[in-house]
Image: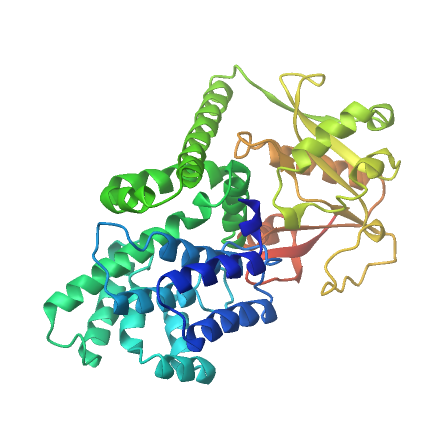
Length: 438
């Protein structure tokens, strides 16, 4: 399944399914290539570390065509055209300032882009129906978000000559949109193993500025809601898939549930004081130990990729006498390591090129890398205690400032408590670079 990991190979898979489903006119190929080019030119290609990148767009298009003959909804040849286009453009928000696309922005873009309009006209596509299908992918399909989407859908139905005053067609298109919305939510989890699924969860969390402590429980809730509320549609889609894809899907759900069970056990033990988290300052002799370096590296790899600073020379940097390291251990200062804080002189790091830190080169600033904890130990205040210990160590080494990255709302909360200040803010991630005076 790994050949599906890049946009070029996925494009070829989609082209094969387009041929099987009669989507052979040049305009459909032009739409596909235009989507790929635009996402990549806007920095939302395969290298973009957010859930809604070009991979997601193509995965949804691929699976929607792969399972198009499901038995839940009877599709016409015309339906297939609309489904293909809606799937391809459902998150088409290349100017995004947050990762999760706003349907309003998507609709505005597809309504005004001249090149796209030309292709739609050639294919004799009613744009209002495309809008309906995209609006139906709104998630979650509940509460005020759903009400707002339904108001816009009603307007689209009234503007279209095909759907105006035609309740049966409207109902059919809403079912088609429901199909697309379920494909939208499960496609990525069909096309790879649990490693890919966990990476997707981390990408989603990073892009939406979620705290790490909620990743697993949110994922479990997501799948449970999907299986409970969309039982018949999920079954119909899975029935059309190869056995390997069905296995990927259920293996992913079971794996998230197992990790969640471990998390609850850890939290219970911590609550009952059967398990204590001990922040520990490590000395130079242990920093030279290869086994210690490997232990930290394994925990380091659990971080989202953008937070893995200095991956290439991580183990070597641990031995550097200028590197400050403290760990989080279980029950005593010789116990199992479940997390660590690491950093050193700002000048030793190559940060994002947009950052202009006025103190760079003055040797008065220590940089704290993103805190790393094993899955299951987030949210128990161990990270906060390691960070405070790191600040104490940096202060004793006569540093005047500490810089690091953190979620925007976390930095805002530190402005009053620690006189933190933003140095550089980044969108759509909202994972910003900040400074505190020591």
